[in-house]
Length: 471
Image (cartoon, rainbow, N blue to C red; front, side, top):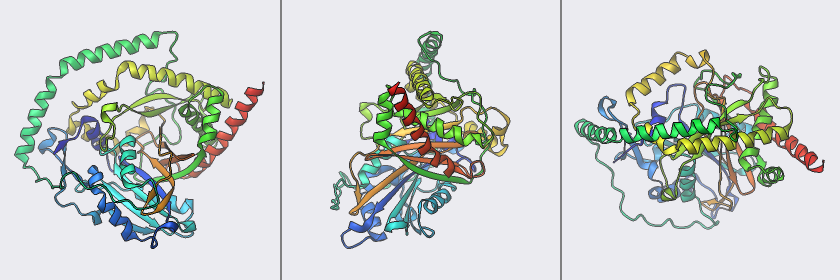
């Protein structure tokens, strides 16, 4: 048994009927090279042979009586692979839009908490004979970095199907603990955590003081604070319905564009998103007179966490998405300067301090407040904390295979939140930057327009950078 960290458990407490806290990992493979031909059973057999390399996939939650403390993971004594792997056909003709519709439907439903918190949908009938994989996993089980490590344990580096290394020890399901055992363990854990509060208060005071000094420094370009964001058409209370869209940009093009003006890949991603959102907002309520505010998840993983396969080591950085600026190069430089300041403030505050406070989150009040907040539509009654979540996770740079089938494309996307109805997640694979976009379908039914606009935004930025270099 293992107790969820406060950060992991927080993703559970946030979940409501309309706010789904799962992430999606989407792959498209070419099965034409599979020895003996592709079959759904082959996929299941390979997955079954590697379950010992995917620890979150056989663990389920056990809640503590009266929600005294965070839930625990146990090795599920009732685990059955057939409960998690589904086979479905794509609507004809199986193109990107049809695949996107199917992904949207999968994303619109919560995971069953009585089982391990994941599903795999194998999608047959995609165009050109391709097969799709939609993996849905709860955010409490794994963040982007852990998901990438899990992915590496499923795929091979060569077409030949390799035998998975045998487990170091035989898997043994846990006996479900009694309510009394859970309550006593929770009380002991709470007492241990209370002993850490005095030192945590001291660290918090120091971090807040350092942040205040940095904000006053003339050398710091201050990022926008939460709740300073303008309201847009997609910043509203959620419904359960989701819409997913995806597209890919050239990684070498993104790298070259950033390098030409001394900016990072992440800077270019944010600037491209700003350009696409600017055009989208022109026909959806108008472009605000100040930048949007983006939450950018950043990994807090250390060398000691290398190879981590579960849990979350992540913090949030707030930066600008300058949709109000007309010049693409000006937008990019603004993103670079503000993001640099945001990183300095984040480092001063300390991600580990925020993780420590999350351990003290009271489960029942937090979850109860989130249910009330969603049910009452309170996100419509105040300014959004931020406008959009934009994340960029480095993915594999070498070809991957499963059951002998080459992976052609890889996409990912995280959840959307009440009042923050758009998430743009980038996973690179080979020489492509794969953008996954998810939104509330009732707020952004034309999400594909925004996805298409990313290409125009990168082209606009490339031309502007080339013009600037020639001046």
